[in-house]
Length: 174
Image 1 (cartoon, rainbow, N blue to C red):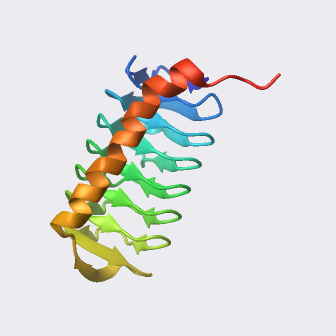
Image 2: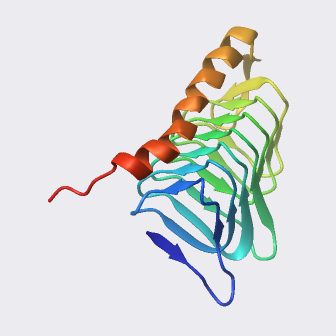
């Protein structure tokens, strides 16, 4: 597993979490509860701080970083889609960041907000709670409804269950 300290900055990873062996966790990174970190993900707290809340899925090839002395905070039960980039931003509980999206410096994506695939949340942009946004730059498309919340609440359980399932059933091909 690629978990590294850097200049005295030591990652803290919950025993309940699962970090794929090809992921890289570096420096001041705090991973709580049942967080699933997929193949190729890079979570780099080399000169900033990264905090990831329980139940979050950090899917394949996600990159999370923070500016010097600053913080990137990911809430609980967040889905970070494949190959998205989160940089010195705050992501609220239950948010969904779509595949290949970017949320950049000092932006905030609030609770249950959704950033669609390939969208760009610009520096200091705020995505209000329960809003679905898309495009470059990200603009409101619609609001999240109860049907969507129920569907995603169910999806999110898949990744928390992966923590134990991967620990028990992931075997290197010989």
